[in-house]
Image 1: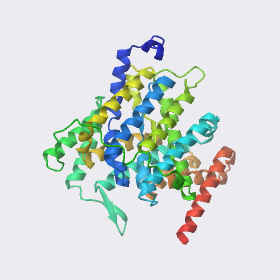
Image 2: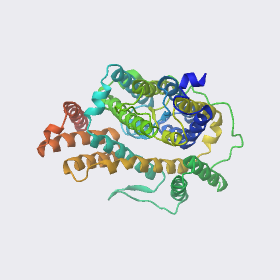
Image 3: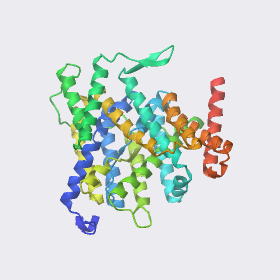
Image 4: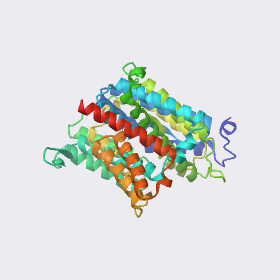
Length: 436
């Protein structure tokens, strides 16, 4: 039955190899079940409900990817998107988390529509690679700033805006301990290095008396009621939320496209014409899981680059993704464990993820100033404005203007001009609101 469903023989693999690959992928991305509730709880959401929503949304995405697209790619609520949800939309713009969930839901609907009407390829191909990479790296910088801020590694300073905090305090020290431990474990290619470091840091926190120990590791799942179907779709349709919906959509689109290309290429699944098999179904898995996740109570669900670890372990079919989904469902019963993970452990993991996202900087042509300048503005704009949406706006505008002024207007596509004009209108609207 499994061979018929997933064409195991055709891919020269076995069910045992696929399940082993699924476990490997799960261990490398299981940190999200601790980190996601930690971030979204700061928006006012119930952490227990978010924990369950995270696991179920991830499982749904994995099952769709496995059964429909037959690709060894796992999904879960995305890092960066959850930070944008909390720190930009809710805490920055003052929107309720219900409205933010409505924006996530609408971005998922938009994702499905562009897939059905074949606009997806046009968008992906039309956006310059420089901006795609700068957006990924900018999210990395944004995440690093969040981790530094919430652990006291940097603090506010009225004279210089920010300055170094007291690194002799427990929280900054343990954050760096967790981060350095992850680096060591990952550099030695130890499976589940991030998860091991999170658990080790949590144990130390318990032993030092900074976290209360809960002897009940396994329990019934927390209630989903506090977040289930709480999304405010009408509130998300306001003018001020349009750019937020598009920010959720664009970041998810680029992240998913890049992950699918990277993972399927490593697995040797890309066809001779360069196309990804079942791409449309793979993208529908992403958007479908995002819609389900918004209904349950979590931010956008996206494909994880950590799936490459399962591919390295032999995963070649959707059975790998299905196995990951099963492990996520099993994790629902370990909610007390999530409650014992301190902020220094989740922040250490965030720092590691931010480093991975900054790898994209290496693919930018820094010798071409018309490429380098928009990239730098995008990265620093996201970080210093504390907003992914604002960074994207500044990056697109800078790209169009700089290319035009340097005699390279022909490199700016119609779609980039359309997006740029929309973003300029957004900034003008924001300026008039500030003036008022």
